[in-house]
Image 1 (cartoon, rainbow, N blue to C red):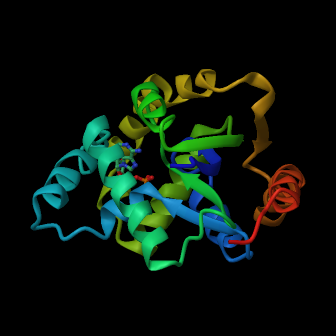
Image 2: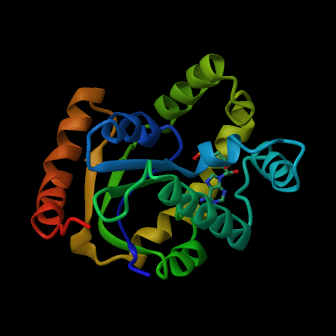
Length: 205
Ligand code: AMP
């Protein structure tokens, strides 16, 4: 199998990965896949749905093997349905991989072209963003400040080290505290060349 050509949207909870990923995903040639959304779409009464609820309501990560297996099955299903076209679309991965172990497991599936790291040095602003989002979108994990703070700790401990799994020159830091349009502009500056190269090498099948 050819590995999926991918761009990773990376950053702490509240940095704006989902907001930016959704906008970018509307551009032809990009396919946005948010791991948290895949989990949230599960039936909560299913085995996996209840595992997700158990971990996410504590602000913890779902175990690695279960997560990567679910993600791999989900993305394959989208390729079969045809809304994601691996030969044409760059995959924008949002919220996965989130641990070094996930990054290693996913090396079999994805060919990472670049890593967009949405940085933020203002934890209180991020927590405020997450609280506002929780009110709008009914997210159980962001309604409680204690759980949000724990999500941040988990990010620092488990997820931030994932950046070291990829070559330094592949990672670009973008300040997520700028306006959403500025952040989008900065991301495009970085991903458009990757998409141009992809299109230049694209063979219609
Ligand atoms: P998110 O919507 O990306 O903030 O994810 C919400 C919750 O889903 C997380 O706090 C985790 O419990 C779970 N989750 C999402 N992506 C992953 C992942 N890659 N690995 C483990 N758990 C995840």
